[in-house]
Length: 335
Image 1: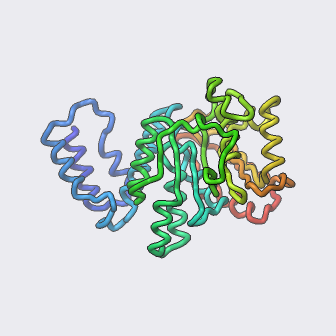
Image 2: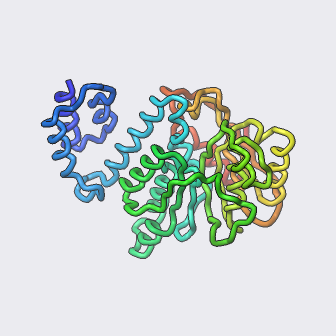
Image 3: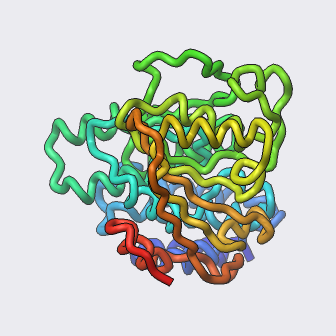
């Protein structure tokens, strides 16, 4: 009964129950029954009391957290397609903790999806610099976070996600990143930090491929070339890539790797177990590649294999990254 479900949801929200999953599962989003007008009116009146700025909630991030929960559930229910715009938040937080972005540097996700990377970067910077000065807050909200997304639904999800987390006028744009010709990129168009989970497994047409020095079909190979050319001198990148042709292939794939190793410092590669991206299918084996544009070639790569078995029900958590976060600082060798 939709009416009973809404009443239950209202009472839980009004109590400011921190168990957001209880709030969300109280409403059966799969119902095909049309909401009666009076219930819809009550629903709108109820939520009209809550400000998007979260001004009067005890937990200032409750709306954003609820929205992130819904995005995750939607991605899981969406099967393979859901993985196009959702990256598990522990993976994102790990990448950000390794990259260590700073206020004042331009942070970019060229394949933004639901803007998880930008939201988590925002949270990281707020926590690391608390309490923020007025100037820091202005720079962080307006001149630090940038993103792009090709598809309309993920773009809308991402825009709303940023707004609900307090970034009310986000630098988030709907555009096909791979349509940009990267043969010549000016310094003004480059970024200090690029953190992203680009699309992989797809293929692009000849028009798109011609925008890149190595015109391959694989989207992940084009995405890596894009990231390499959009990074400033001194800039750092953390990128999720499939452990397939881009890592081990011959021909143009090998040439892309050669350029990466000769013009960038690839300082770490973290291999992730199958199932981390459960919404994309358990068969996708991925790794995280960290590199910086120093003007010097790579001399030594630190490798780490993250162990574990993950599924839609057994999700990866922050605690699974505790050991690698500790060891990557000193580049410790272990089992």
